[in-house]
Image 1 (cartoon, one colour):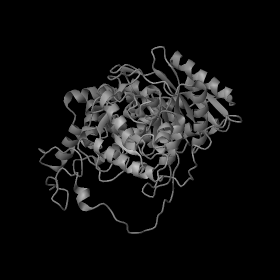
Image 2: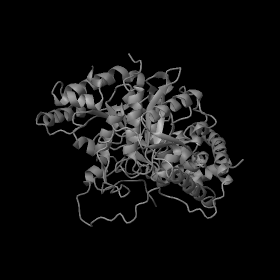
Image 3: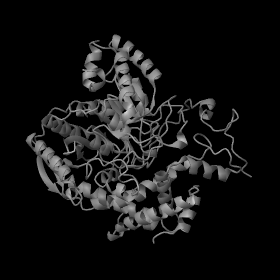
Image 4: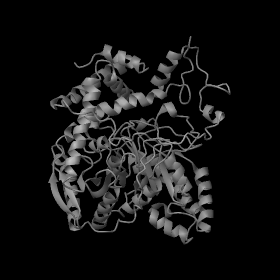
Length: 486
Length: 94
């Protein structure tokens, strides 16, 4: 097998036995990127030189057996995470030449573990989008059907894993941005509990919702990546001091004694029959593995999108005020006054979706509208959290679709922002409640597009999610399937 | 209409954004539809419901008040569109 096609566990084994070196593995990945990224466009920046230097360092650690599970493993990082000395664009023109002076904590942790950073992968501008079509550097293609979207906003992170252009990647999830592209690209994606992972060095979109997580080729790799990034960080006061278990430890146990709730509202109107069939088949496999299922109701699910599209833009309008042309990023050099400079730099640097959300957020927070919009949405958020509390009094996890449909054709929804917002209806409530959530591949449509099954749990239930995901993966046997790429 | 071009223009100004005339027209139509949609929240009676700002709020995230090294000035200034080696340079404010 070509090294680029490996999982973390496979490659780790071959590196440890010195069957291949980290430099050879990294070269295999760099060549693979060269070969397929012309078609897929998953990468915004490839850092060949640094990747090979990191691989050499990993080889030295491997030689004296001091490398951990991620030592020498080539990874891709969503371009929303700061990487010291490596351009970080956030998919935006406004950060087109931004070279961070420090690493995000997650990147620093992966580097310290000996991982190799191949480069930075595509995303919707400032993580705002569900199709990765809002990127100033082009739209990545779905490796399973290159006429189709790969999902968003962590589209490059998902496409790069699916196309074997990295062994695993990091994404971020504010309203489904890890789980949705993972589902569309047939890879595993996990959004940890809010606060599990440090966000120091993550360019903020909506601070009460954002969370960083891994996208991988299988569930075991997902647990290994999670081990690498979780834990409290003094540089992020919202990160939690919760103890971090070894997430790989409990994967292989069966699901006896586990109760999985099936939320009626996630199987409602607008759900594609092929998606429903694949997800219900996945649920039957979970039952075979020993889980009991129970019907549950989360009655406020349908209000999630409306609440989210007030809360997230409101937070974004504040977070994105920092892009003003003063300390970093694009500046309009013709402006004569400070006000003109702010206005012109922002107007030239931001794309249409970012402007739209800044304006929605500014409006929702503006004098006279705050109670009607922002406060109302924050109260509905409380009701959505109440739904989950009630459901988790009856079950350990929830199983449902991730998205109502498989990936759509590129361009099919680009004129209708509201239609795209509504496609996030099944992933958004999770973020509003700060819960862990995961997408595990559970089937394909007749057209050959991947379909994911979403697992959600109460705060800190990552081990249960991974165990259910692992059992599902074993019983479906889909994780070796690869897209028909040349 | 929930929102007019004049209102969008005003909000854009608050957000330090200039919108070209065709951008403004498109944005007004889109925002009108989005705001109509979010009004579905009014179907819910939320009187007496406390708003949530963070699902897992951390309070009193204290740390020791120790002096630690911070980013060197030249590194902090390295990405500035204009700087003079000591500070960020901007157009005249007054």
